Image 1 (tube, rainbow, N blue to C red):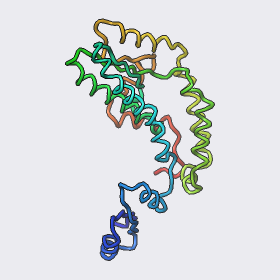
Image 2 (cartoon, rainbow, N blue to C red):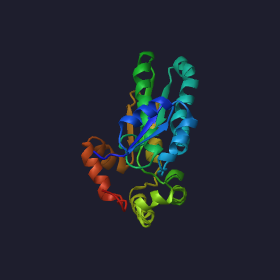
Image 3 (cartoon, one colour):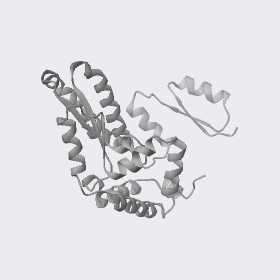
Image 4 (cartoon, rainbow, N blue to C red):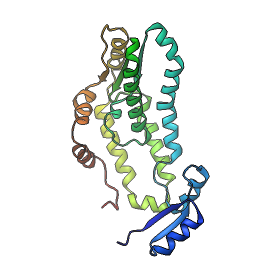
Length: 244
């Protein structure tokens, strides 16, 4: 059907056998998915997009691996004291918008915390998840966010930049500014109040949604069909120049 196929083969023999029975649109590359070096060599067939593996790993290391490591290290003491575990995730752990590794890491925190709660309730330990909306913090500060977007854009190949168009980055930054200025809340006591209740209440909740946007926008959106969320994001975010 005229598809261009990039086939990863573990051995030379497998690659040769495949090329003999395939058409001219098939390209083979030796690929061992358990070898980082092999994966990197295969990249000559695949142009880099915005996010590299290292970008995801850096975010996951802090937001996911750090949470797991701290929790598991202190878990014996928490069990002994019949304490509580309160993990801070995000509304973006309920709705996957854009944001690369951030949404992935927060979904992971949600899943990890749910598993913990179900495993540890036998020992009288409550596990709570705080799901803040957008607040004015260092994470949502526009200057570093835009600086990171420019860094990602500048590392793209000219071919990939061309698929988005010269004006894409400026349009995206403009939309991001509008969203952040509209939804970011400066009252952090809405988050700390949830934390206090999770730590001190006789019957803490499994989840706490902090912020008006979390309650009125993101959480309701998380219960809607995926197609509705997809359409909503398409209406808000700019389209790449060569989108189909």
